Image 1 (tube, rainbow, N blue to C red):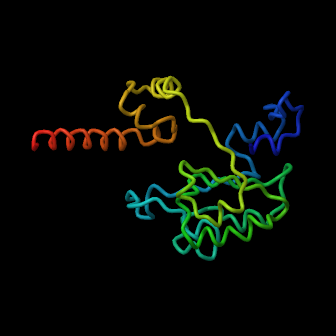
Image 2: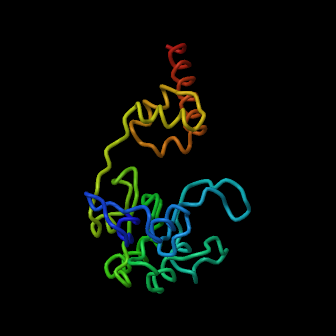
Image 3: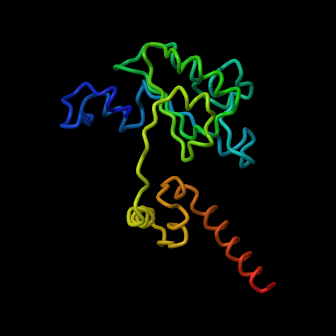
Length: 199
């Protein structure tokens, strides 16, 4: 979506990005000046694993980022005019937006500077704050097939795990936390088996 909105080359039949223009090449290289990705932190400032996923207010406003966790903040990013066509902010894990962060984003979402585009990604719409949902257009993504999930596991050099694929139910993001999910499934199976012995 970010590529499509910034592409300056010859578009495809379905208006898809060309993949060859300077904007498309910058996006592929991971160095696009008009793209900002915001995600919950997996680690704390001390390097320990975070107890819970959260996108804090500090990701949105530099003045509120006291521990300097974020190099670029949404407000400051959007103050600058786009280099190509349009600034794009992707919030990967909109369900992890803290109340303060979501409220701070609302003003920007309602009146985006320089016509910026916001893309909120979430696995469960019910977990996203209603104020964000009400100001967004919803694009549903069809869950990946079990075959596609198995292929993704094999390309990552992992053994195909039928329990993991069934649990994922087409949510590719589950594969990112493969070890954690696998351990949780093993624990659940052990607990279920223990319950069976107790009866």
